[in-house]
Each structure stands twice: as C-alpha cells, then as structure tokens.
Length: 398
Image (tube, rainbow, N blue to C red; front, side, top):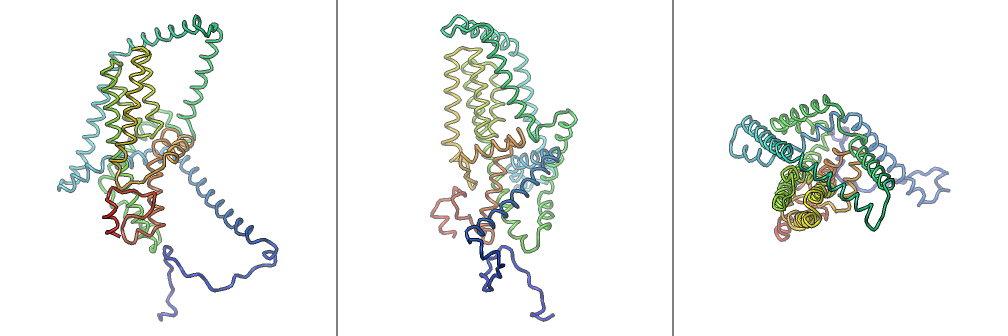
C-alpha cells in the first residue's frame, strides 16, 4: 500500500497544528454573539462530563458490594507494598513473600484485637459505673446550678441530643453506599477483599498489563506511565499514613495510660484506625479519649488529655507530614475537607476512608498527562506535585 493510501492514526496526546480551514457558519450563528456561543460550548461539554460522572457514581453505588472490597484490597496492598517489595528485592520467592505478608497482618491484627477485648472486659464495668455517676452529677448541677433547669427541660435536651446523634449516625453509616448491614454481606466482602489482596500481591503486574490493553494502542504509553505515577503516590500516601497513624496512636495511648484514663489501649487502636480518615478521624478519636478522661478522671485530667491530643495532632500536621511525605501529592487542607465530606455523604465511612487516596491518584494522573511528563519520566513541574528531592537536583534532572 502506498504512503498516500495508508491510513493515518492520530496520537490523541500530541498537539495538532491549528486548522486553516474556515468554519462554515449557519445563518443562525450570525445572530448569536460570540461570547454566548463560547459559553454554550463550555456548558454542554460540562453537562456531558457531569453526566458521565453521575452515571459512574450510580454504577458504583449499585455495585457497592464489589467496589468496597476492591478498594479495601487495593488500599491494603498499598500498605503492604513497601515490605512486600523489600522481600522481592532480597530474592524471596513470591509465594513466600505473599504468605509472610498475610500471616504478618493476621498476627498483628489478631494480637491487637485480643488485647483490646481483654482490656474492655476488664475495665468496662468500672467505666460504666463512673459514667453513670458523672452523668447524674452533671444533671444535679443543671438542677441546682446557675441555670436552674427543670427535669422536663433536661429531658427535652437529652431527647433532642439523642435524636441528633441518631440522625447523624444514620447519615454516616447508611449513606448512599452505606456499610453492609448483614453479617453475610460483611463476611462476603471480607473474603472478597482478601482474595483481591492475594491476587494483587501474587500477580499485580500481570493484571495491570491486561488492563492497559483495554486502552487504544496510541494511548497505552500515557495511560501506563500516569497510572504507575498515581500508584506510586498511593503507596507513598499509605506508607506515610501508616507511620503517622502509629505515632499518633502511640503518643495518645501513652498519654492516656500515664494520666490513668481507662481503656488506653482501645483508645490507641481507635486513634490508629481513625488517622486514616484525615481531619475527621483525628477529631472523633481524640474526642473519645477526652470524654473518657472527663467522665472517669474529672475535669482537670480531661483538660490535660485534651492538651495531649492537640499536641500530638499538631506535631503530626506540622512536622511528621512534611518530613515523611515524599514524592506525593500536596492536597490543600480545604480540598481534603471537601473531599472527605463529599465522600462521607456519597459513600458513608468507606467514602471518607478512600476519598483522599483516590483524589491523590486522580490528581497525579491528571498532572502527569497534562504536563506531558509521561514521555520523559521526570517529575512534573507543577505546584500540585511535591518531591523531597532537592530543588537543585530536580533542575539538573530536567
């Protein structure tokens, strides 16, 4: 076939020179101002994008019993990947690395849960008694104190508070996605997440190579490079959050134990798990620690516990995160709040948990594609990408 008759394939990621052909306008276009035509062009394109996103969210909501275990498996894979990759680089057989990773996670989780259950069984009756006494003392203060409330007014306030808590809990736990409400769904999701985790550890590269083949041939290099950059960001985010969560849990747990706050170990475990939900998780778990100190140890110990929680969180936000977060996305705090809030409204607790790593992945993919850095493999020169590599070395690399 001659060169003239051979079909030409356009690279969708290569800028094309502007066309010199004149656009044929209809008589109606002559009466429509150019700014209005431009606005209408933007409007229908935005509507198409919003429609696609809405359809995607609808499908995710309908398939939540598959999507949530998939996201859990991916996030746990990212958490295990540094240790798993270390074993592979030191020539461990892959099957042994997978087995060691799974057994290690099961041992850590099982040991922590055993200690938590033991401490709760030991201290729960005493905490319940102290809580009831503190509530009764506070109620007596409302009756005899400067507020001089009546029994009916206090009961109305309690009923309104319980109603508000129930409404918010229902919104959080049973949002558009919600968490599986039956034991069968929970067990099925856990087994599916475990199976996905094993598959990703055992043959993640092969799964990704098959996935890349779903893209058009011309778009495969860009899709592969940008997704790998996004995956590296998720791994780094998970590794950083794991270390930060461990430091938060250790600091607050030790502070609670030294102050004599009950259930210090369950509080530390809650802080560890809550740290994976930025901002919201730290506030909620810190409030639980302060509440236990208030009802069990009194006001002054609660104030000291509050100072410990705030000190640990400030140390995390201003020292640990900047030092430990390398080659990752800088997501503005406002964006984090909006993303976590939106994820919680759409998908409940899973949405709040997966919102930030998903936003980080999308951000890196978009910057990598938009900057064209997928062609060179260099760090994109954009404000949303931050690297611990010194600025002088990054200039030399470019």
